[in-house]
Amino acid sequence: MISIKKLGYGVVIAALVVFAFSCGKDYNRLSGKWTASGDLGDTTDLHSWYIEYEFKGKEYTKKGYPPISEEGKIEVIEERGDSLKFLFFVVKSDPEQKSYEEWIVLKDSTIQIGGLMLRKSPVTPQ
Image (cartoon, rainbow, N blue to C red; front, side, top):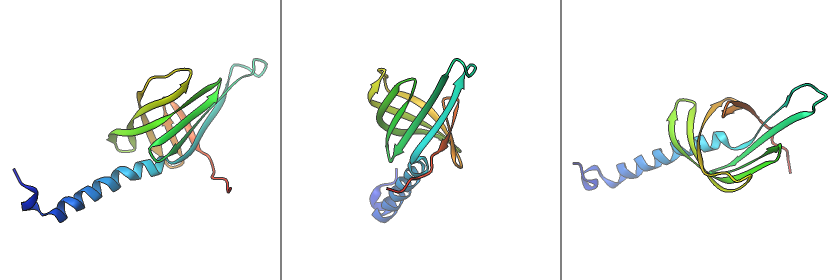
């Protein structure tokens, strides 16, 4: 077994910095608002829906119609290329939702969550 003293503290610190940077980049790629919407049935039924996720670092909110709201924290637990498995720690939700795992596929300006393709919303100046 190699001790930290033999490796040198500089090597250990460099490895930790590289690890922290590589984990953070996926959160940065996910940052922003992502939306999807559609209709179920014909136009006379008016069964429209929408979903919006907003990611800020390791925090997220989800809202939509029919009425749904959720907020909490996320953590990457597995990575396979552009696919990341997240643990969603639900802090507050309506209807009530327990924490869950979900794969997210990141591709350019789209993400796929639970079979839905969401597009990144443009940033609006404040």
